Image 1 (tube, rainbow, N blue to C red):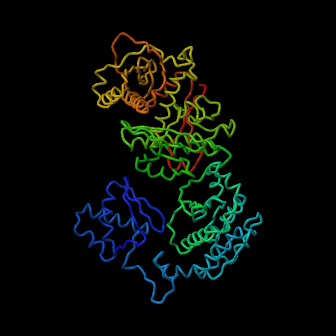
Image 2: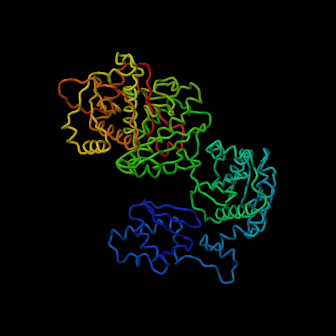
Image 3: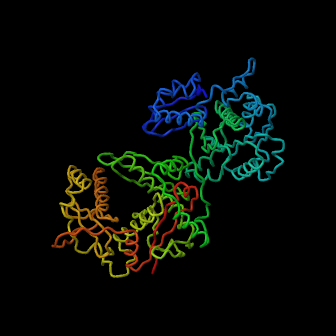
Length: 620
């Protein structure tokens, strides 16, 4: 094989890898060393050398890396084999020459297009422009349907009789017919390009056709209103021919097989600037609310998750990218925004409510960008799972949960259960856990539930609530954590020093109490500002000081959780480490049963990360 880089393929190094741009669109290849390898390799991909010749001077390790990169570039159609690449025969027309350039096969691929019968349906001016574009592209027979049966409710298979491929434009009132046409074309194997039109924007669907109801519901309310208000693209000027040419080329790539396999991105065409943007989009859950399932189906889901393998952080990072898009994503944004980034790195995620115009922002922090983004993405998936479960829109519909402790399935009235507060409230994320496997999810969820109940005393029925509603666990006399123990831990020592540099003297208190779950209070100026719970006191102290440090670098320390902690006179003894089962037992001793519900009402997001759940509290 003699790899040759396509003439229209260009690349640019970015911090996380390389971005490639070609006629097929934008492709990102991630990797810490891939940019350097690409910059050295690309000039030599001219079709004159075989792979063996290219890699002969390299060590075995570098040879394997180059071969793997060439394989990826071939799979993405950024590189072709010059030894097999066909050239247009002498005297061939421009269409075949173009087909050779786009597909690598200037004969059969082009003939499939020019010899086929095309159907164009939609509003008059755009139909005429699309017919002209297809005709100029060589299609010899084009059938036009101007606001005909394709737009109406009486759509049937007769419309597609004799049609080899189709273009369909429709407005927001034509979504249901568009879905039927897409289903019929898929059933008959007819390539189809569809476009939802308005005066300002045109949304062009991928092939195979997607569910346009999902596209509509993923839109922000303001976007939907714009599509309702002005439904027709400009009938004159540059927009009709440019849009028609783009639609015709999109169809050409589908018919000739040049379109990238599995490319499910939406294209949004701006009728004013004539610019296009690509967008990722996941399917949506049904608009009726939570998924109803039987006890047997729920138990099967639990067994599958328990037996599921642990995802790597890299796998999760790759998967979650499919859910991030500023126009159509469950997660509309995941970036550093304008958050201060010294000394900790901070990341913000914007989560879209699939049933309303609400947007929920969550932030996370860590010692580096990778950890901050990973934590923010996990939080975003958990919060979106609560939004998608939509107890507020579905009424008090019971759903199955797993009673932790004895693993008994139990029907849960989620709306009425303690700890089911809507996530845009002050305690958003209470009891919510997302992780890379079942154990990590359950651990995160029970710790979040325990901490929330510790701070509020909600549901405590065993004398553990104080008169002010706070858990008596936090009001009991507590002991300052030994300074020598803090100094012996490098992370705690570093965070103490950084907080001191920001002008905040911090004292840590052991608030573990009678429940035995390691809990640390972080005090500034005598008042406890943050309480953290973990499976060990050092982990709780790490997280607590990180929380304070992130708040301090933003210039806003949290308010007091406990004004003046009562202090025991005797010395401090470190609390023993615990297990998730110990935390579950501690919750059950308060007189409530912790029940885990799965946050998998959005199947597409559950495929991104299946390990997301929420612990709510029921009467024992």
